[in-house]
Length: 395
Ligand code: PHB
Image (cartoon, rainbow, N blue to C red):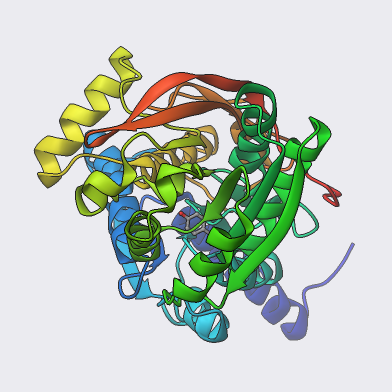
C-alpha cells in the first residue's frame, strides 16, 4: 500500500494536466479547427502566371468540396517566393515558423523547391509540390512528408528525346535553356531518351535564369545548323524565346522541340510564332474526357480563363491533400497514414487518372502535342504510365 504524500499528489496533478494538454493538442490537430494551407508561389517575375494558375486550380478543387477538406475549413497563407532561391529558406520559414501552417503547397522554380524540401524534411511539415520538377525532390531528398502533384524534370524531357529520335528521325540536336536545375535536368532527360535511340546531343547552350537576351545564342544555332533544337523555358521567358526563334527565321529550317512548358499558358502571347510546334507533357488540349471537360468548364467559369497544365497541377495538389486528410479524418499529424493513403490512391486528374510512386511522384501518361491556333492539341500518347526513375530515393 502506498500513502499519498503532498509531493506525489502534486506530481499526479501535473501528470493529469499534461494529459489534458496532450488531449487538447490532439483534438486541435484532428481539427475540428481550420486547416492552415501555406501557398508559396511566384506572384512576381517570369513565372507569375504559373503561380496564379496553380493557386486558382487548388482553390477550385477546395471550393468544389464546399471550402472544406475532410470536414476542415481551409485557411490560406500566401508568400511570394519571387522564384528566388536565395530567399527561399527565409520565405518558407515564414509559413512554417511564423504562420505555423499545417501544409505547404509550392512552388514553381526547382531551386526554390529544393530549399523548401529541405525545410519540410527538417520540420516534418507536409509539403506538396504543384510544379517544380527538381529530380532531387523525389530522388535523394525524398521523404514520407513530401509529395509532388506535377512531374519530375526527367519525365516529359525523356519522352521528347524518344519522339525526336524514333518518330522524327533526328540525329543531331542542340539544346538551349536557363542554367539552373530545371533546365539542366530537362536537357539531361532529353539527352537520355534521344541518345538511347541513336541521336546525339551536339551542343548545350545556356544563359542565366531568368535572362531573355537570346540573340547571340540564336546566331550560334543558325551557324551550327542542327537537325532540331530542344529548349526548356517557361512563362514569360518561353514567350520571348519562341518569338525570337521565329523572328530569327530559324523555325523554317530547324524544328524547335521542348517539354510542353514552352507552349503551355503562353499561346495567346506567342501567336503565329508557335504554330506547328511539337512538345511533350502530361497534359494536352483536346483530351476530351468527361473529367477534363468538366474541369475546363468549371475553371473557365470561375476565373474567365482557359486552364493550362499549371492549373491542373494545383487542382491535383488539393486532391492529393484531400486523399491524405480523408484517410486520417483531418488529422495531418498522422503522417504515415497520410502517406499510405496517397501512395495507394488513384488521383482522378483532368490529365487522366494517375498513381503516386513510392517516392511520391506521379506515374503518368506523357502526351505528344502539336500547337494549332491557341491549343496544344493532343497528337498521341508518347509514353504510357511513365514513372520517374527516382534515382537516389531511399525511403
Ligand atoms: C522548374 O523550375 O522546375 C520549372 C519551372 C517552370 C516550368 C517547369 C519547371 O514550367
